[in-house]
Image (tube, rainbow, N blue to C red; front, side):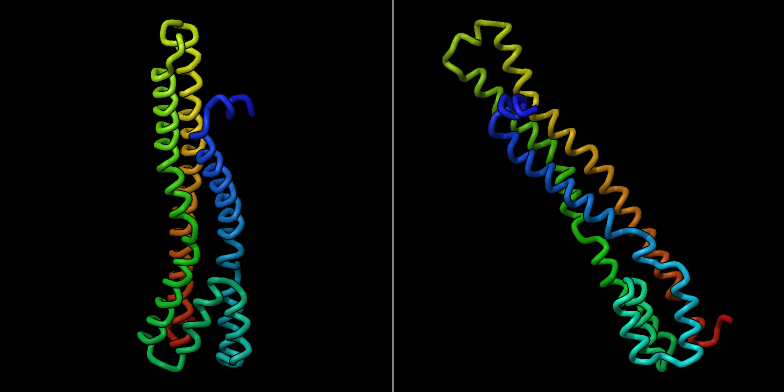
Length: 201
């Protein structure tokens, strides 16, 4: 493997850095976007029961703020529960936008790596081809040496595709996961508004 990296030349080093960054982002997002961590099961029922028994106390709101992203959305709504339904919904929407922005963190970087990795690989291949055909040695007259030089230059393109394909797969997966989590939080927040304002049992 190290011999391939050496043979591919200096353009492969940015690709290696991009691959390390992509793996780090994938691992971080896979841990951060766990459904049980973002939308804990049964939280709505517990919050509704606590609210009906003692109202929106400061201690309850602090606990919700530190509980989960869904808890922060619920806390924002319950802080405005004494106001109208519309005011409570606006507070929830504002908190939801902030939470959604946090869930999307690093996804743009991962998508950028997926998009530019093939271009970086192609750049490395072009540099390799320039070096091959611009070399003053006799490799241009030796078909075997020329074929070997071209295969070495193509390592960069291959490596770029190896980085881009999984990065794009995980980027699309995480985007869909974020969209699903945001929709689920919105639905649960609407149910909380209806429970607080007596429109749902």
